[in-house]
Length: 451
Ligand code: GAP
Image 1 (cartoon, rainbow, N blue to C red):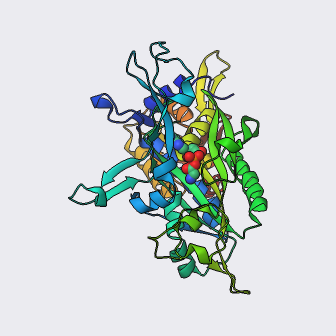
Image 2 (tube, rainbow, N blue to C red; image 1 turned 60 degrees about the vertical axis):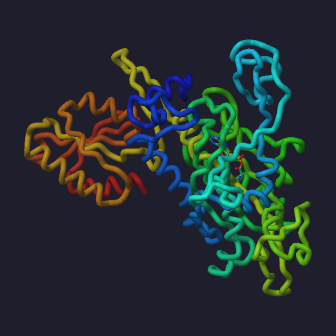
Image 3 (cartoon, rainbow, N blue to C red; image 1 turned 45 degrees about the vertical axis):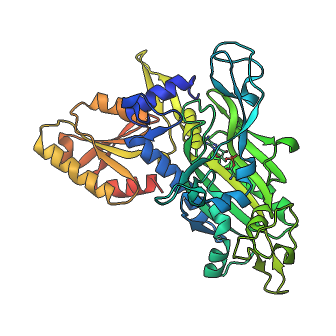
């Protein structure tokens, strides 16, 4: 069973050092969170699982890490300056501000129905680059990682000699000045996206779109998100983003309700077409604005026919924070023990666990035990499977409880038998079974476990 409420997750995250409110000592900054010692590991593990499956395990995807600050023209031609807005209303009684589509006709704060008419509010964070603050120095913090993939299209095609179909993957920060950030890390103003732009021949886009919807839901399952909690939502035509021909959202039952975890869009040739020079010489199908600023033809040549093609784009776009929230929700369990007590256990998939193993000497002041534990920690750490922790508290029961709660798959106890007979005890997080192993068996046991 997953967490019963968001409060349980928020409390665990704070208590054990996964996630904190940002700038907390000064009252916080709304819509921002900081990832603590365990949160940063979990987040990195999720991102690296995505990167492995998207880039390393495929032969048709390249990676990119582009700048966050983005030239105004990029977000002008992409359509974001004009259309990346939410409808904003003010409550005339209590002066609070709301997203019109989320509240109906009543202010959730004071109950007044005296609201202004909705008006568009652009969600992008604007700044100036360089010492002069004028119209010419405006730049934006990117609202999606996708755009710089499109602007780098020619660089990547030229440097890798790719032919269609192929993709470009990127993980990185995105920023949106959300009117009402809420539900912990679900809707925030600074977050990370894991995005793939997959370029295909026009006409093959529908097929690839279906393939990616299937691939992505399977991937979430492999991260521990149960299939029955994911629903495919066909986004209604009148709610599609300006670039999309069709979008399917993977909806997940978060503790606060069912909402979008990832969107998979068919962006057609809108973006490459919009950012390209010589648009009228290309057979662009989308309705785009004339581009008089770009110096690059964002098309690819068919090697057989020499014809220039503006590819269609299939885009699976997932939020890291929403992924972390879904995974925590799935993994959180409260179990009744035989003695009537309860334990909280975070049954994370081992590859996602922030700590892979805790090595615990039975007594914290015994130099021989501690030194052997340290050697074992160093040896397991050097295998490169992730963080291994020397847990020198001298309190085995308390250490087990802590490591259950943070999802450590195994605790390795070093006791006097370890010194005399070269054995250790491994306690399994999920079954709580304890088994004895020879020290020389440890590295292969550990490596196999995390294979
Ligand atoms: N490039 C396409 C794009 O950005 P989106 O549906 O606006 O599409 C993609 O965002 C994903 O990014 C969402 O499915 C969600 O996981 C995440 N995301 C979007 N806005 C977010 C926010 N304010 N806070 C946290 N995650 C967000």
